[in-house]
Length: 266
Length: 305
Image 1 (tube, each protein chain N blue to C red):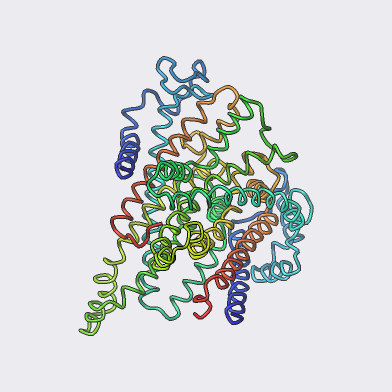
Image 2: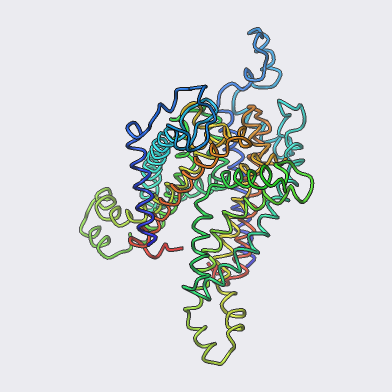
């Protein structure tokens, strides 16, 4: 049952994001002051409007686009960087492994949100930089997990046999070890996806990351604070969208994990 | 045991030193901080003079050496905005954050542990299913959204609780609930699976066959053995609470360390950023160290590694 909920919610978000330009009844960026702060159910605005008269539903749809884009890019970037580094470190061992693990330890000594936020404040705001910041903070998980997996896969008979037959190290790594480590990477990626989306929202909420007027759920929630007394829908719906997306992706990730690698079950 | 403790301490010292370096590098790499807090109509030569005065013109290794030397003494420089000792500011805000974090962790323990244990004991019951739904929702709901909703409900509509700030017990209620919600969800889930796993072990079967009452089977045998993964996660979460507090403190205008960090980042107040981020990382590392040592004490197998 959880599986279908996960698939359903995630599919809904993907559809919303993909179909945004066609599904949105109004332009999410154009202010329309005569329509400002209309409650949900107003004609033409099923979820209401914000303080500048922009349709909330349209902004939510485009916010979905942004969330999925950021989540997707970050997951891909972190999986590649962390996965490769973990793969090499686990395979080669000796000093690359030690150096990598110390770097990972140091980076892990900072709480994730704090680190991503600090990096973002430093490199500057905007879409590209938030992806960069989240990736820089998030790759370490993969490095740790993949390295551990590689260390154990390396011991397996077919890997040792291939090595004994004289197979080159690069081929061994990519042809034999990597495919067996891939399930862990996928599981971690799916669990990290929602974490990245929520983290981006949190960072935008605090004032970094994606800036207004770009519709992003985090900054929409931040702006809603000023209008909480008169327009509850500005806070309720973006947050609900965020929570439902996180829920859907989490459930999907749980199902993936149960299917691919029950050992990681929490 | 002693070798374990010593080795962990040494590793911790190394990590602390490296994170100090990392924080320094991160902040220095961001470009010229001097221009950001000077008035707009300043002359170029004056900029240079101020830069010289504050020591930003020296070569990077010299700046680094000066920074480390100062950091060891607890001197992170002066806040660019408040003109006060940076570390002093950090330490001033620390008790507020500790109060919030401590209350949240207490709430978490009170809610999550019983919930997890009961879910495991009465597996697949109504309680278990309700608990699962609650934990899944708790993990998915972003803290800042929950905070906003609670503010709307309890402060705006019902007027029971204040919207923010620190002062009375009423001020503490909502922030700690928000912080506790996410972490209780995680810990409740983990407790449930840890207890379930322990219940499946042979010694439980033996205890029951011996005729021990269910209460003793669970209380004496199961709980102790399932404690290990729970303690590990709880320890890691305790450190994460420090980071999570950042958002909660901002929403509720709680005058703690997290909020100070955010403000310092927004104001480009680098000495304070350095001090705050480093201090947070230090606390986090020390908590992890404490967890590792506790782990070594709880599980004798670890010490022999």
